[in-house]
Length: 267
Image 1 (cartoon, one colour):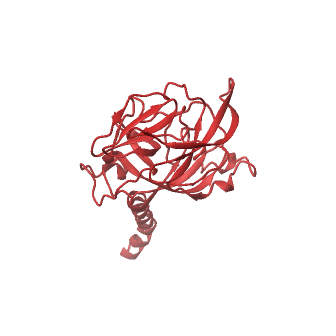
Image 2 (cartoon, helix red, strand yellow; image 1 turned 60 degrees about the vertical axis):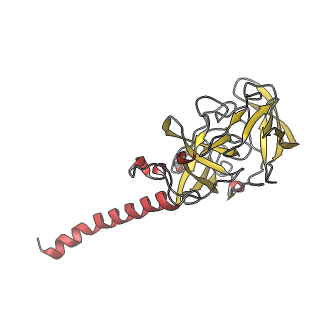
Image 3 (cartoon, helix red, strand yellow; image 1 turned 90 degrees about the horizontal axis):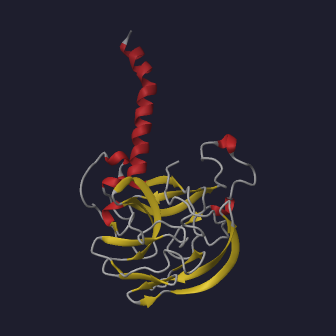
């Protein structure tokens, strides 16, 4: 076999290797796609939403790279997270699991929930009633209330409350240490977050990236690549395509789905 023939036979493999390397660089350094399989961020994010997470917003840690292939401690080129950011992070103590929550507590803050109302440094966070509705978990019908919560910096977002007397609606005071953040889901009574012992305060090192852009949304009955399962046309939620910011992003009516695993999956 001539050298030219060998080179031509290797060409497809070279193309695959280059494409794979570029895709790896894109996912590790720029944006990584995730999908939402749970309702812990309703009404901001729906089950079946697909979003891009910015990997460069907070700099890079070992969790920025697939399988932790570049192990190191801390972060490089770190950017400062802001209260109200929606963040994908690795669960402390179980780093194989990725969660998505909102930052409500910064280093140095004291955080507490009283009768369903978030308190930051002893001051209740303002919330205004926005909507009321019902949802089912498959067994019973439950009433919910949506509120617009305004953080101390002035940014606002929607939250959902099933009641103000649930197990997560009255907590002790949490003092957030340096290098850690207090995370909460917008679906306040159906979120496994910093109020629970299985998550707790989240180290900055565990941040994967900032939820940046919602690029696809469907009713949760199929994965993005399972085109043959899409319940067209009603199953695709075109209105879900939007930027996610710390303020009024994605305030849309969203069906609650009971208690869910608050995990984030890659497409």
